[in-house]
Amino acid sequence: MIHSTYTILLGGDVRPTERLRQALQGSRFIAADSGMRHAEVLGAEPELWVGDFDSTDAALASRWPNVEQRTYPPAKNETDGEIATAEAIEQGASRLIFVGALGGERSDHALQHLFHAMSLAEHGFDILLTSGEEEATPLLPGSRTIDLPKGSLFSVIGFSALDGLDITGARYPLAGFSLPYGSSRTVSNVAEGPVEFHLREGKAMILARPYDFSGA
Image 1 (tube, rainbow, N blue to C red):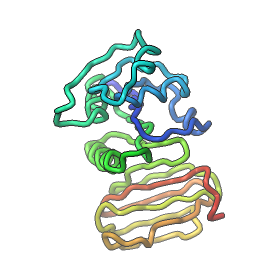
Image 2 (cartoon, rainbow, N blue to C red):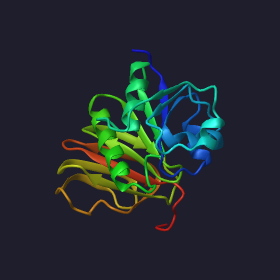
Image 3 (cartoon, rainbow, N blue to C red):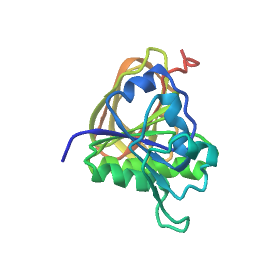
Image 4 (cartoon, helix red, strand yellow):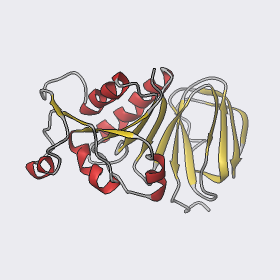
């Protein structure tokens, strides 16, 4: 497999922060339907634009006449974002960044992006979902470090019961913690700098707000 980073532009909210721009350096881009509206503000030119284009207006389409489009019928089995992801994987992506995956008008889409991301992580892909001001990273058994500004907020949301959860580099550290499924115990922690996570069993999503210092 060719090791490369692909960014999938989705239709949710995006704030073009410096942290987001740094994360996208060296990435290749694929837009899913109305996610193309984020390309200009991010200074990106996608190599492919896919979807049923039911949420793309003529003005947006006219600004990108040279980007290859692949049109799919509205009555299909996958979302536009999932189609874009499959195209990136076909091209050899090993790391996937989903921009516009969080927030927006469709909570069903945002929730599906999180579950899709978890499934991809379980298949070995390196995953980041981001709006620029909020980020989500899957946490599976093993270790992970996330470089967060001191004083910024983060939460660990269990997608199952968790066992052997360690959190260091945070105001509220944990060691060998067992989190029941549905518990809010790991919501609203505060980073003291880079935060290290270790998990023995289960799966979770780390949601971070690098520009939110309301808990500091």
